[in-house]
Amino acid sequence: MGYERRDIIEFSSHNVDFTPHDVRWVPNSARFVVVGATAKSTGRLSVFKLDEGGMDLLRSSDHASSFKCCTFGGHTIPQREMFTGNANGDLESWDLESLVEPTVSVKAHDSMINAMDGCGGGTNGIGAPEIVTGSRDGTVKVWDRRQRAAVAIFRSCLEKSYECWSVAFGNSFDNSERCILAGYENGDIKMYDLKTGTVRSEINVSNGVCSVEFDRKDISMNKFVATCLESQFVIFDGRTYNASDGFASLTCYTKQKTTVWAIRHLPQDRDVMAILLGDGTVELHEYEYPARRSQITADGQTKGIIGKLHHVISKHLSSQPINAWDWHTEKKGLAVCTGFDQYVRVVLV
Image (cartoon, rainbow, N blue to C red; front, side):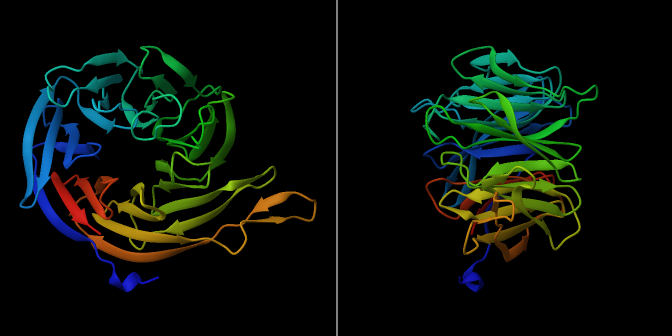
């Protein structure tokens, strides 16, 4: 597979005077947005542009509540609205040419929005343009960007509700099918089916789930990954579900003993993934499919078969956790990442 020819090269870095929590490329451009929190617990939005000499800060603005996450997933063209979630539980959209005030602001949750994702719109153009948010209050909500009220709400029926740390869209291959993954602090991973409004599957991986992601949003469910505390991440084959054993899975451990902050699949090759570690390292892995994806068990049921994972390369980038990473959808191997060392880095793989 030619692993020995791969490397992760830091092209440019920029020190910021706030703690970055998320970063996203502006679709179809050389710009990216960093959101986070200042030392005063206010929010900061910063827009950068990449050029041959590195990165330049185009504009920046401060706001009352710190930002935890952002997405362009439900944007329209050419507006390319960005959506953010903040510590106050607000879901907001922004015009990047004017960051003074949000174009829309909705009180979405009772407490901090920890994670969000978008689907439909100009990025994944199948189905309605929607945003999903996961909160410290334990609820997962789905929003149609054309409405102010949530179109779906998922909450625990138990007396104790666990904090939702991560959410992701997937299985959005036509105008009616769409699923959501939600990862919780107690190790639960729930898959919600938006077509039926039900819990499609529920898994517990015995560790808080820091990040979840389908390998692609706009195809029939293929595989998905969850990253956890204590060096653990789990790959699931989503092609086949067995009533007794669920999805076939492979539990992996990083070379360093640390939290696995996030997983990000390469858009141009869904079998290549970046794993972000708490010691400031990024690991690149590649998935190899088995010769057969499923088998018939003795009781006549179909059961999935999981493949293998190959470690490609590790690169230590920061003295603090690398907490966010975004691949460029048009330029293969180009990515931007942030760390708790308050640096923004553009890297080439």
